[in-house]
Amino acid sequence: MTPRVLVLRAPGSNCDVETAYAFEQAGATTERLHVNRWLEAPQLAADYQILCLPGGFSYGDDLGAGRILGNQLRHHLADSLAAFRDRGKLILGICNGFQILVKSGLLDIDDEQGPAATLNWNKSGRFIDRWVNLRVASDRCVFLQGIESIELPIAHAEGQFLGRDDAALDRFEDAGQLALRYAEADGGCNSQPYNPNGAARDVAGMCDRSGRVFGLMPHPERFIDRTQHPQWTRRAKFDEGAGLQLFRNAVGYFA
Image 1: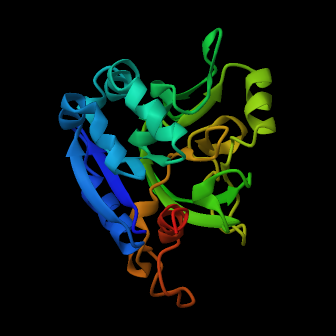
Image 2 (image 1 turned 45 degrees about the vertical axis):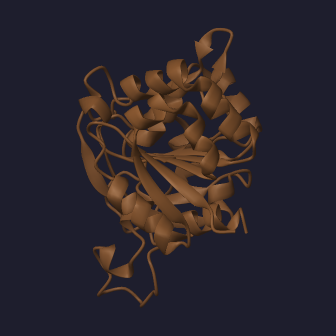
């Protein structure tokens, strides 16, 4: 079966085209859909196997990164999203999409006190655009299967993952949800801080307890071809961008 991917866009989304292309390169068929079309017909998600929330600045991040679209999903599409996840399907949020997932309640971070984690302004107080090294810290996440480490670009201002307290972080850790971490470069040659935004426990990505809902701040869709790496002419030849494997894992899940 060729899985169908719904790439959800909203005013301000700007990574939907390349994200759809990445899924297509991995063997899926994709459709980019405005959130208003889904609000008009909540049942349409049943026709897809993968939902992706791409990067960008949904609604201009006017009330905080991802907050408006996250609230739309939480308050108007909660039943449709719950049914989607409960049928064993996959949900991916990249950068702004991760911010949306955190605010939508899909990542199993809420408890009786409310959300136990959030994404805050980078510790530097500035927008950061650079490449980072990452390591996979859990075997739970479907999208990260077979990956131990990976290098990807980031571009965000509100990417600092924070837990309410150590107890909440311990709970996520024990459940295998803190799946992707910022890491030192293998050769130790990177002069920049390996954790670019001050994230608690170096968290760059988090999954829900099932491992089928995953949000990450780095952009795998921006490294699916080797020529997208800034050092592609100086490094030992590699056939493709490392980010493509995340999309292949999602497509392969339905093989």
